[in-house]
Image 1: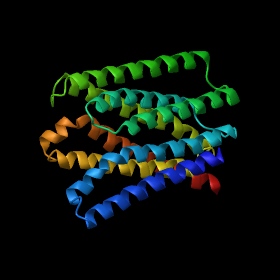
Image 2 (image 1 turned 30 degrees about the horizontal axis):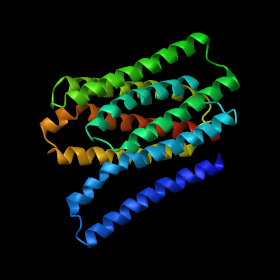
Image 3 (image 1 turned 45 degrees about the horizontal axis):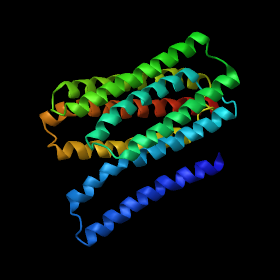
Image 4 (image 1 turned 30 degrees about the vertical axis):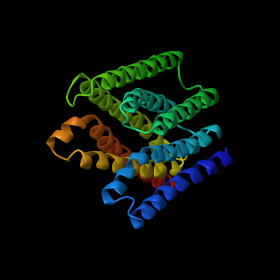
Length: 261
């Protein structure tokens, strides 16, 4: 597990360094202008996913040590990413994201599933009804996301059915984020030690990279009222999701310090 952590930490720093080096070299040699360099934000979501995966590996390691972590929150988190996987399929069809953003989300899902499995084995805090409901919810979310992605791929009009499905799915996925954060906060308020600080810091950094990607999308589309409407789902997911996670981190820091006294 420690080796995997080091590999992941090396990979995202190496990816960022490579991207920065390419941008610097391309600017010096006039291969890219500032607009072209800004367009490199296209690759940032994949790097952000490496950060998120690394943070979840830290959380997995804590769960393996039988630390107290809210399992219902992990199921909601799993469901949230399942829904976004479906959206990414449609986005990939329209060349909206790199293939690695999609592949890395599959890896993240496997890790969160691993967390849930170990947590259930160690503590068995979930009832059978919880497990059944969680499974149904996760599968349903993936199907909704998949349908939204498919409709978006065949209807690429700015405000058509594809837009409506993608937008509503992105909003629902963000609301699920609120739900798993809510469950985690209940546990953190009682015992925060099971949650590694790196899990939050890597999430914050990853969210910053996704915010940069979102900014690139909005600037390229004019950053006007129409672009806000066209990318409402993405904007809601990035801005509200990032805000929720930031508040989540602040609450964690508050309880962590309070419990250390």
